Every structure is written in structure tokens, then in C-alpha cells.
Image 1 (cartoon, rainbow, N blue to C red):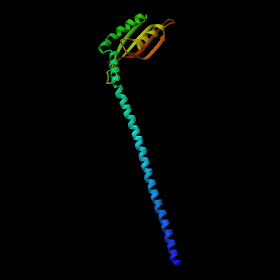
Image 2: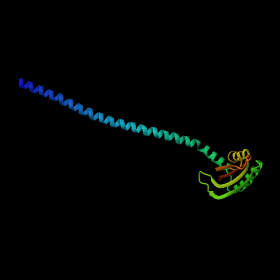
Image 3: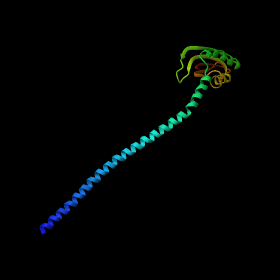
Image 4: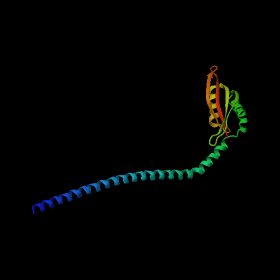
Length: 177
């Protein structure tokens, strides 16, 4: 009977230990799967958020695409054609006379042809002399308020000839469509 009791006790303890081991293994396996599934959920949520932002950006771009086309058309209207640039030297001459300046102007022959999203440009140089304030107003009008031409002065060198008269040598580009 004592042997039977001991055997039953050892068998009961073995069953309890085996149950704990099986429960521990099941818990480990379950935790491992939950961690892997949690990582997949996190990755999927990040993907969903990214796709949601992309869809929102696409919807916004589609909404403003018609406005962009209208702006592009207006910008094209602002730029003269390449043939209209033949009037640019005459316009500069008229403006220089208005500001009481002497002007020598030349197109340099370097032409950058228009691309899909960029206007074309022709490089020019000019030598202008006269009172400093008049030179300043002339270049400001050329770059900022010219109604017919879009021009950019890339290099400008101003030197004093005397206390009243200054000389400006400029290099720039005038744009066309």
C-alpha cells in the first residue's frame, strides 16, 4: 500500500509537472504567434496609412490639375514667341531713352530651346551708361515690370565713370515659348 501510495504520488506529481511543461510550451508558442501577428498588424497599418495619404494626395492633385492647366496656359500667354524677341532690342532702346541712358545691346546667339516644362531663352549682353538712379530704375523695369518680355539679368557689373555717370555691363536671358 505504501508502494502504491508512492507510485500514485509520483504519478500525480509527474502529471502536474507534465501539465505545467505542456502549458508553458503552449503559452510560449502562443506568445510567439501573437508577437508575429502583432508585427504583421503594425506593418499592415503602416501600409494602409501610406496608401491613404497617397490616395488623398492623388485626389488633391486631380482637383488642382485643371487649375494648373489654366495657369500653364496663362504663363504661356505671358511669354512671347521666339520671333517676337526681335522687338526686344527696340523695346530696350526705347526704355533706355526714357531713362536718359546710352545703350549697346547684342544677342549672343546662344539659344536654349523650350522644353516641356521650361521656357526657351536667348542670351544677351548690354552695355548701359548714365546716371546711377536711372540705371537702377532701368534694370528694375527690365526684370520686374516689363509688360512684354520676361528677362533675367544674370551678371551685372557697375562702375563709376565720374561722380554723375555710371556704366553697367550686363549679361542675361530673355525667355520665350
